[in-house]
Image 1 (cartoon, rainbow, N blue to C red):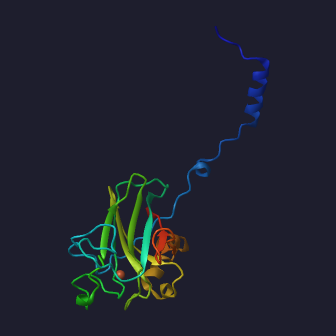
Image 2 (image 1 turned 180 degrees about the vertical axis):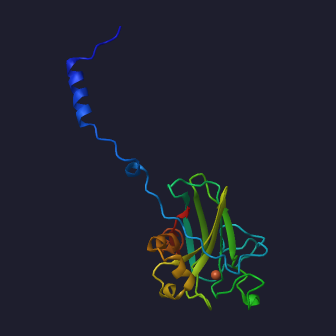
Image 3 (image 1 turned 135 degrees about the vertical axis):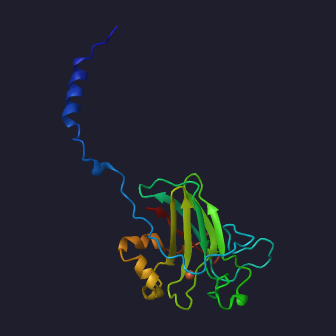
Length: 216
Ligand SMILES: [Fe+2]
């Protein structure tokens, strides 16, 4: 049996039809588009040969008792597309100098003086929610690069980003030509500036930062 709607139901349906919002133009209801992380130069110190230990803890080299010298930084975030969707399985790599500004690279002068307890390079696969994390060192400035930075790559099917991350508020940033080039559009600052906070609950004296990598 087909039930006929009551007059009260018809009245409510009519009221809803009157109150129903007019459909918004498509651009008004789409998710906000995220600013993409800017491409930056790879620089001269991407490893020619990867260290035997290439995990995401750069402060502790497997098989060594000593821990790297420097201030520990927990860097984590997500790899996203510009619609905010996570890119799971992205390969995220970082590399940086030790706390004396020395890279583990044949082109680095004074390489023999480097801190051998610092891994210098690490990589990790983003999880199903696009999350990545590293335990590394707070970067330091060195000759020619007043903006302390961490080099970064993120790659997956159909994309390959190379960039660099800086410490928000560091006075050396504005003197650094690569930082200035990467932040000509002020909106890009949030993609390349790490805002450091004490890593309370993780380890004493360490800093933590969260920074999403947005693939354009
Ligand atoms: Fe560098």
